[in-house]
Length: 401
Image (cartoon, rainbow, N blue to C red; front, side, top):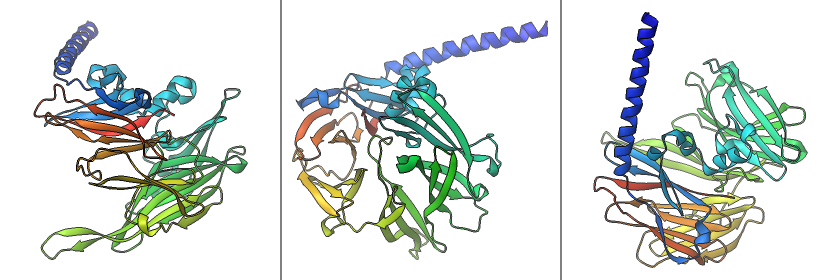
């Protein structure tokens, strides 16, 4: 008899919780602003494949949303779509097209796609335990032509040395070799440098690890390294190089009880994935203070941004020359383009967006041609219904390939 009493109580509690949840959701939904993009000039087709992710932020809460040409979709209005909100547009696109292959697979950096293959390679704990020797690389390959899937796992050398792994890129090179680039963090009790970037080379046919190469590691002593890698908006596309900056830093005593982080040395490094060759890139003098924005194959996109506007440079990694430079066609309103701007490169275009909106301001959206700087689209994102205690923060611009 007790079993049925307890069951009834549980059912009642579930019903109450669901009812309370929907009352809360409906009340919250009524207070959300109406966010949409209004065209000022250009062709609206330039933003049809664009998704802007962001948050409606208050003092005590934050509401995620995705904004397209059709308006904003708030996560709070779609409680059963939480997983889709957490993933990039590319991941959701692959899920729709290759549902069975994509089951249980996340992290866009772990995917590689071309016209023949869709490949996923990730580092994971095989038994979901705290035992370091359970760490494996799991690789799945889908041949698109015959929809044939193969999967295998391989062990990582010296896995007990590392406490965490973060995959940064996966690329397919000649001879059916897969390159998995990962940032490995040493265990705190290890008497070795803390951070390392590894390139794991995997033979897809023989399903075995060919090599484990360390690109760089933290120096020992009072200095430490900070790595920043770069990518195009679609991280799954084929690339010949892996690019990253290696900043060597140290904490300096200001003699007043405070400490300050000081840059000791900075290197911009390109690793040729086909030749297994690392090269420190010495950029031309005019690009020494430029922002490295993105790269695609052998081309790097850099900007110099200030109150005068945005200059865009295309630098060729192989011939070491600036192949193109242009000034983006943007309004001359005294805006500092180096602050509070979200920027993305995709489809031979550059997308720029003011990162914040409140009750008194609007955000401007610009789409410009990479080669000429010509304006292809200009719009504004309104502030209708924004509470004075809230603001909108735009996090990322994603564009379909």
